Image 1 (cartoon, helix red, strand yellow):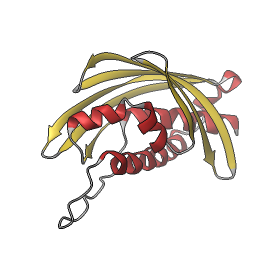
Image 2 (spheres, rainbow, N blue to C red; image 1 turned 120 degrees about the vertical axis):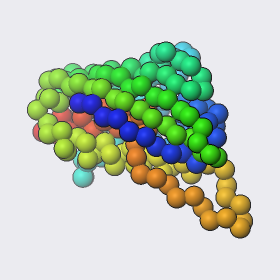
Image 3 (cartoon, helix red, strand yellow; image 1 turned 30 degrees about the vertical axis):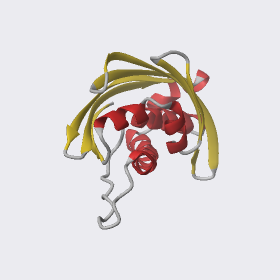
Image 4 (cartoon, helix red, strand yellow; image 1 turned 90 degrees about the vertical axis):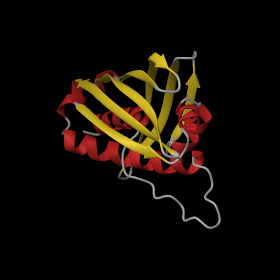
Length: 181
């Protein structure tokens, strides 16, 4: 599975970089996130509970940041194991660029799944992952965006998916769907 895209974030580049690399900020923005543990400056573990309809499930994943060029870019490698359910792994190249008062986040994700995960329809996985990512970005934009001035209207939040947390969302969706099919 491959996906590319962009997201305009209404905050300065340094603030977006800080937010994308702060476990507490991310935990507050990811629905159902139980923990994000920093193992080192470049390695994290994530535990999230997510729901599909009336069913809830927990997944665990590992994230590794590489090719770091703060505050401009990095590559995220991810690996999630689901025992008999299978696995999900891949990478996401992430870049940030100042654009006006905001930041343009661009990404390219490559992922593969195996085991039961490979039997699940990609449309279903994509739909669940998009919802999780959209929910994340709505919360992330509200958390890091500067408060609007009294005379200015609030900036409109663009649709899209964060590469870093889109990856987590896709892994969560794959594990959840694999467990219940």
